[in-house]
Length: 419
Image (cartoon, rainbow, N blue to C red):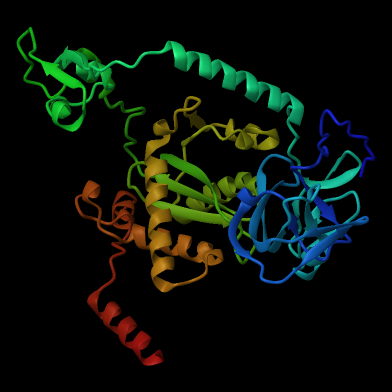
């Protein structure tokens, strides 16, 4: 720790006061910021920490999340710390290396934190300390400056109070319906008609021109409500494929990412899970090989939201070898709508099954794959109440994948006898 001299005029904050240091001596995780706790319980015992010659009391314990960086420094990796001591007067926050090692985490000096699968997050050297999460300390006024500023504001407010006069007449705003419609962000005319009853001081006067028969009587609403079709529908199965990369929490098997593929024509779903974002490139290649081998089809068009990590190095060259690579405009996720919506359906379906089964969240890869399987075999209104898998097989001239009643009966009976 730096040795600094603080004058009577200002208090100097430790440069790593808001950061999380990796500490090999501390037997417990420490946090000095109460807002970081997701769970908290006040301690009933007189626990304390010793820092140098100072004894600092522990007020309670709880769970916090530390936001580290992935080994490639491209994404955030979340570390969940249990039984973390809340010590508001401590000079910094600590991640106990001893506690981490008991949980199977290892640290190579001047390297990354790792588990049995591999590296999980970076450790930075900041101000001669090993830091997992660095948050710079903002410059603050000294106590004397704060006192002077508060005194100045107090005097100013007293003067303004003397010169101001209160009006005995309540404020009222009157305007016709079209003005209120525009003032409130082009709200519906039905809502405008209820303003006087719902709000005090609002008066809706009669419209001078003849009222429109449309719910929203202006050209702006008509333009704003237009729905655009970004790209035409594909006419052949597996000709255009939408895909979306989804970040999840760390699973029991180390997976932290899911990739969802959607056939534009048949709405058939395909899903993969993997531990690192860099695995996405190989996953796209594997999916392309799977479609070619299993269905004898060549994917011609890839459509995604412009994920930059997929355009790097040799993978970008592979994409340009005869493929059409469609990306959405920046900050326009709606242009990748089919994949976004379908992926959301799969995620919600998997989450619902997990919640109902009361299964731990870290088993999400199993439910993600199950949700993909079930969605492919669920009748869809958009497909005339056929299943996506059935439409895909029809388009490819394959046999109907719909199982017979005998198959269902046999499987159900077999399943019942086991339990």
